[in-house]
Length: 247
Ligand code: SF4
Ligand code: F3S
Ligand code: FES
Image (cartoon, rainbow, N blue to C red; front, side):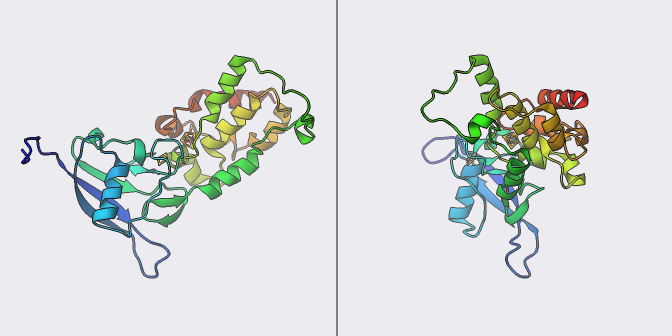
């Protein structure tokens, strides 16, 4: 019991991979920190506590603290997830290992550069509406209404926050450097579902019709298991594959 009569919280043990590639001679190492657990504590809150009270040089990313910006992805006890959405109570043994997301350039400690990869995906998929009208929009004409079910289907796939968890959980990406990955497949499915986009299946075949695209996916389903936004990876990848077989 504490002095105010509240039951004493657990002492959590954090083992964090520390490495600053920018610092000459620095080597990767695991460092142990102890943190008193507080009600409602997330990994993000614990990391802030460590940085404020023990280790000002600790690097990790965050912006929104609400599962929206996708910045705080990291490997938490072996599984890619968002630090701001993961409660410490999820780990009854009280020992938590944190590592940076693999598959991305390491900036330092738990901070990685997901931006470059996400940009390359957007460029490959050309993630904007392709149509004659989009090339020369007439601003005086009202946009055509969209059927609500179609809008919902597009919205579902647009919820991706580019956190990189699906990319880090994918074994195929370890083997094939140019593999588009689940984030890219969700983007392709999103534009295929959009009636304003004029791209045909033959056009899409040029983007995903090989082993760096949907035929390279080995259905490992790490994407489905780790996506914090529960995007329908399994169903959509199977759907894309069926369409590309017929293209
Ligand atoms: Fe993250 Fe899911 Fe988007 Fe992948 S598809 S980047 S796991 S939100
Ligand atoms: Fe990778 Fe997901 Fe396919 S984890 S192998 S993209 S099912
Ligand atoms: Fe934005 Fe975690 S800080 S998703």
